[in-house]
Length: 449
Image (cartoon, rainbow, N blue to C red; front, side, top):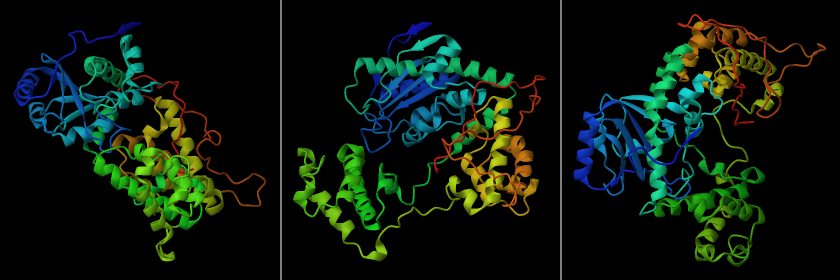
């Protein structure tokens, strides 16, 4: 195993002025082949998700490091220079929003992480893929650093440059593997879906994601959590500081549960009695009083409102037939996962499967199910692969209550394995080979349960 400690051509000097940026754009436009792109943010340190460093590499142009902050957040000249060029990113959904913010949007995309998932690789991080595909161990260790730091340390710049050093070579090997497995079209459709995906919609009640909120049961205590969360969020946005660095989630939940009777009592609590929190004590106490003082009709409900099905572990009681449908659908998808050596969550979004089984279309025939899946964002390859088995699954019903066998229930996340049917073997499209059972264990992501 070769250990790559520095870029082959050395670490390029960071571009911070407009003239050098324009020269880089010309060089990239004159290059050939795909361009490797990466971005570094300051997640966990800053409120915003902006890019603090952008890395690029293209044959004929070499590698480049660009500081968007020094360039007033406008790198559109690079986006213009790369029109029509395939961009290679790793875990593209993480970087595309901050790249778009600086004026960089790809016309064609290849995502090496997503390609690794579709190909059935058990580990799809950039480092493990480089080791598997190229026999190279990358220098790692600064992915979670505060990239808003200026000046950036030399070791960080080495790490950043290495992130694009091998991306195109990895892309070529992954593309060839997808082609061999009959999944090249899967990849094209998935990459395009990622490229065109907009930002996720803002949650209706984002404060409910405060870690530890499940301990808070009473509506008036929940109102305190909400008030503290909102006050913290406003301050964090104004200062561009990660909210948890202003006040930890645990302290918010603690204040709601302990119900301090005064500002002084609040500042005697853990975390709140620290010097930094004492300077913000008036703000936090106002939030606590606001939450407590709300009229009953303005208090939050004990449970979050949702437009989806209930948690899966309640289906057997609420709708046994829906539970039976979900069990059958999951078994079908688990079979496909084994046949095609692809994680089941990449075959079809688990939330879409739950919605389909809880409220099937009427009629639940092939046309109705395909329309439902299309409206839910399923790609053509996913619909083609899963449609027949899902239609059959929707015909499942729970056995009568007086039968000796218990009614089937859908397992929640972490509660046993997904029921499986005997695996069937399928001919891979365009390969003439039979798909073999791979090493990926089908796992359903079920965050609701």
